[in-house]
Image: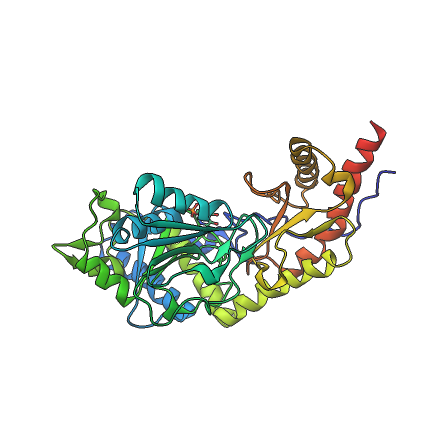
Length: 389
Ligand SMILES: Cc1ncc(COP(=O)(O)O)c(C=O)c1O
C-alpha cells in the first residue's frame, strides 16, 4: 500500500552537504555593503578581508601564534597548498576512511610520489586504528569524513610532543566541532559548509611549527604561484593579514562576514556546536525507532553532527544488487526533491547507497524534525511501487 503524505513540511528543504543551507534569515540585502568594483587591495577591501580573518579567529578560538589566511580554490586549494608546500621533509601517515581522505592519499602517492608514505585506512562507516599513527611523522587526516559521516571523536590520539606536523582537513567540522588547536599544525576549511557561505575561497590556519617547516624546507617539486606562501625563504605574512595571493570575490567576502556576524550572535562556537548537536539528536531519535534506516557510522562516538550519513538496513533493500540500491535511493531522493521537502540528500557517489543529511548550524532543528515522516513516506513509496511492479 502506498503510504499517505505527512501533514507537516519542513519550512526549508535545504539539507545539502555542500554548498550548505544559508543561515536562517539570510537575504541578498545583507550583501548591500559589499566592497564591489574596488580593488581588494584598497584600504576598504583589505579591511573586509582582515575582518573575515579576525572574526573567524575569534569564533574558533584560534591561538594567537597561529596564522590564518584566505586562500584560493576552497578547501581543496587550502589542503593542497599545505600538502605541496610542507610534505616530503619526513615520512607521512595519511588516514583515509572515506572519499576525501582517499583523495589526499592519492595526491601524496601519485602526484607528490612520496616514498616514505603509509596509508592507515578503514571502510565507510569505520574509523581507522588511530593507535597506528606515528606523530613523529607528518599526519594528514580529515576531522569529519563528510561522505561517510564518521568523525574523529577528539584529538587524544595525537601526541602533544611530536616531531611531525598534523595537517587536518576540517572543512565539515570547523564551526560545528571542537578542534584541539595545539594538536593541529595545519587546519583548513571553506565558507560554504557550516557557515552556509559561498564557495571558491579556502581558509588556512598554520601553527608555529608549520611556519618553521615552511621557512626551513624547500620541496623538490615546482610550486604554482597560488600555492606559494614564502618568498626568499620567509613566510609571506601579508597573506595572513588579508593580502590574498590572487583576487578574491568581495561579494563572497561580504557573505562570509554576514555568516560570521550571525555566528557571533548565536554565542559563537558553543552556540554553533549546540545547534549542530541538537540536529544530530533529532535524526538519532528517529533512527532509534526506524525499521529501515541506521547510521553508517557504526560507533556512536564517531557519528558526525554535520554530514549525517544513513544506510538502509531493510533486508528488501540489502538483498538488491549495488546499482539497484543506488536507483532505489535516487527514486526516493527525487520524489523528496520534487515535493520540495528535501534537496540533495542522496549519499555521496562513492559511498554505499544511502542518505546524507546536513545537520550543521544553518539548518533549523524544527525543519529536521519534520523530515523523518517524509523519509518514511519516500521509502514506503519506492517499496510499494516495487511490490506492485
Ligand atoms: C572533507 C572534505 N574535504 C574536501 C572537500 C572539498 O571541498 P571544496 O569543494 O571546498 O574544495 C570537501 C567537500 O565536501 C569535504 O567535505
